[in-house]
Length: 607
Image (cartoon, rainbow, N blue to C red; front, side, top):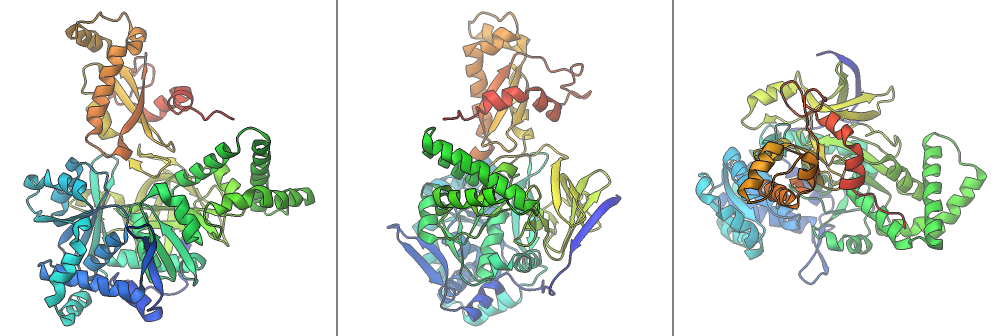
C-alpha cells in the first residue's frame, strides 16, 4: 500500500487513554456537582432531570445491582430500547465495572437479535417494553447464553438498584479501578459490505481518546459552559453514543428524547445551543418552510431569501466581502425569513453538526446564509464515530472538514481514504481475518474514496463498495435482500437504490419464462413479452409479496419501501452484468437515472 497524501492534526495536549469511561461522570461531579446534566420529559410531558451527583449515584446503584447479579468483567449485556435517560444510565453502569454494552436497534427483527446474541454471547438484555421483550422471548431457545430479559418500563432499573443495596462501596470501587483503557467497552454491530452484521470492538481507550480529541477540536461546542444539546438519534448508533459520553464529560446539559413527533417542540422548549443530526432533519425543516409559505407572495419572498442566503454563503466561503446590495438584502431577509427558520431550532442555536450521510451543498449554503453554520463531519463505527469535522475557524462547505486533533488521514494510491488514530477499533468481533484486512499497519481502510487538500480539508468522492447510505444516515447493505428476492422464479435480477434518498427502493427485472410458468399455475394467460409482464397487475402483486417477505428479515429502515419493474433484460453484452453475472451497480443506477429520480423518488412539485 502506497499513500499519495497524508495529513495529521497535532494534539494540543496529551490524552490519557487508560481511564475508564465512568471517569467522565466522576470528573463532571467534581467540577459541577449540583448542575443539571441530563433532562427528559416525564410521564406528564414536563421537563425533569438529574444533577451530576444524582446521576452518578444512580449509575453506581445500578452497577452494584449488576455485581449482585453476578455479572463479571467482559460479560456482555444488550440494550434494546429507544434513546432515553435509562439507556444512558444502564450503559454507564455496565462500562463502570468492566462489562460490555451491546446496543441493539429497537427496529431490529428477532432474527437480527438472535444473531447478535449468539455472536457476542449476551447474558441479559434490557428491553424497553413488552413489545421488545416479546421479540427477545421468541428467540430465547436459540440463544444459549441469554439468561433473561429485563423490561425497562416495568421497573428494571429500580429492581437493579434494590438488588445492589447489599454490595459495598468498596466492592464497586474495586471493580471500577480494575477497569482500564485496554478493556472492551462495547460491541457495536454494523452492516458490512457482505450484508452480514459485524461486531466492532471498541475499548475504553478508543472512546476516551476520541472524546478528548473532540474537546480539543470543538471546545466551543463541547466544553464552553452553558451549552445545551437535544440528543434524539438512536443510542444504538455509535455517533449518538459518543455524543452522550462527550456531553457527560464536558460542560453540556443534554436532553434525551426519541419522540420525533415532538422534536420541534423540544427544540423550542429546551433551546439547544447546537444541533446534532443527520441531513434528513435539515431537509425536513427546509421542506416544511417551503410548504408553509406556499406559492403566493410569501412563497416568492422565501424563494428570493433562499437564493440570497446561498449567495451570501458562497461569497463569504470564498473569503470575499458581500456587496452593499447583498448586505442590505441579507439584513432585510434576516428579519423577514431567516429569524423564523432559526427559531424552529429554539432560537439560541450557534451551529449544527451533520453526519451519518452526505450533506447537500445547497442545504449547507442555505443554513449558513441564514446564520446557522452547518458543519459536516465524518466518522465510522470503527473510529468511535467522529474523526473529521468542520469547525468555526476551519469551515469549508463541500468538505468533511479536517481530522480531529491527534488523528491522521491519508489517501492510498487507489484513492481510498485511510485513517490512523488511537480511536480506531480493536477489531471485528470473531473475525480476525477481516481485522487483518481492514486495519493494516494501524491504518483503517474506510472503503470511501476521497481527496485531501494542502490545508487538510477532506472531500469524499465516492465509495469503493456498494453500501447504501440513506438521507437518514442508515447504512444499508443491499446484498442480503437482493439475494433473497432473486430466489423467486419470476424475478431475474433486483437492484436496491436509495443512496442519499429518504428510503430504500428497488429496480426489478423479470424472468419471462418464470413469469409465464407462474401465471399458468395461477390459471392466468401468458405474457407475450417483458413489456406486457411488467404491466401485469398479477405479476406486480407477486413481486410485492416477494419483497414484503424479504423485508421481514431486516429492520424497517433497511427494508424496500417502493419498487419499479423494468421491461428489460440485463446481460453481459449490454454492460449491466459482469462476466460472472453480477449486477454492475453503478452502471445500472446510471442507466435508470431518470426512473430513479423522477418515478421512484417523485420530485416535490413546486407550489
